[in-house]
Amino acid sequence: MAQTTSLAVQIDRNGGPEELKLVEVTVGEPGPGEIRIRHKAVGLNYIDVYQRAGLYKLPMPLQLGMEASGVVEAVGEGVTHLKAGDRAAYASQPPGSYCELRVMPAKCVCKLPDDISFETGAAMMLKGLTVEYLLNRTLPQGGLQAGDFVLFHAAAGGVGLIACQWARAMGLQLIGTAGSDDKCALAKAQGAAFVINYAKEDFVARVKEITGGQGVKVVYDSVGKDTFLKSLDCLRPFGLLANFGNASGKVEPLDIGLLAAKGSLYVSRPTLFTHIATRESTQDMADQLFAMVSSGKVNIQIDQRFPLAQVQQAHISLEARKTTGCTILTL
Image (cartoon, rainbow, N blue to C red; front, side, top):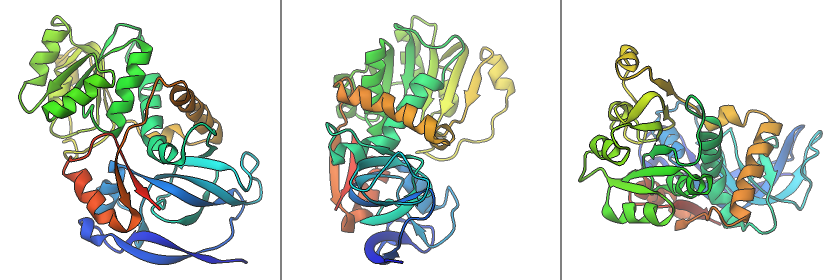
């Protein structure tokens, strides 16, 4: 069996960014259902922080990273949708994209259209597929129609800026929150119909004002602990709160009686990896994302680039909420 080496980022224990170590690993041949891919760029996501810190418990040593793009070097038995030489991109489990070269399951790896760059491919897969399942598949009672109000927290982040543009393309009135005037301006420029600086304004009162007292049909909340209960107060009767992240910490246990008292509300805790559990669903969602990007309706904004060796600084910036748009690791 042919083997080669690759630089990769690993942790031996949970902790802060200082636990991220650049090491040399051995990479072999792909087995059945696997590919070997040489990365061109790697995406950085908040789930990487959760895994590093231990909010999501995984076996050690752990090679981090959930998305990347590159060129397929070899395919294992049974892989028919990819071949050696294909440009490809993915968001996939298990973690391991913080590296130059890896062997991984093929089912969540998609051919990358020629008109989409490797950097864009690495930056957009996890975040873009997240927006796809939120706006197209995580829906309130009766679905979403043009003109409907939705509230999207962290609207100037990587997921948020894609959501602002995608929602505009759907005709939705997205109300975006962010923690500074500059971030609010960025979300507004990317398609948010309204923006709220939650550091200065009560976002519940402002949402009620914007919607004429009715509230929104759905809140998409990746902040978690700091926003969860107030997000419920932003919903109209039968509204949906989709909590898809925990940037401020894990949401406390919920008294479901609150859902009755606040208007027969719904709460969901969706994840991307449930949605991309099969090759068919992954490809369908990726096709929707590729179409939005290729059409120009969604532009993937990469605001930070760090060499792989500077991954500790990348995590420091991400956790300090000093980033906007997407962040990638370059190779």
